[in-house]
Image 1: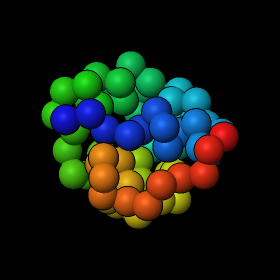
Image 2: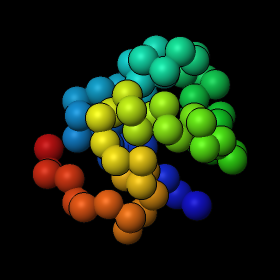
Image 3: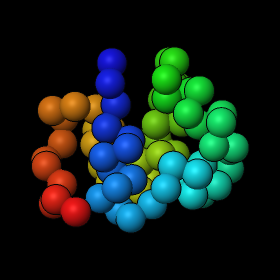
Length: 68
């Protein structure tokens, strides 16, 4: 499943590396997790760090974000 993490980061003006720092992992670990099978805990941390609903990373599960 393709997650919307890049889109959410762009909308928030954050690099994935900065997001990784916010949730306490390396950027490599974050990318690997998101490419594979991220845990619910990782997705919750990502949503909290981006200040979006927990469903936001999933396609079609959250309202559209404004275009940046």
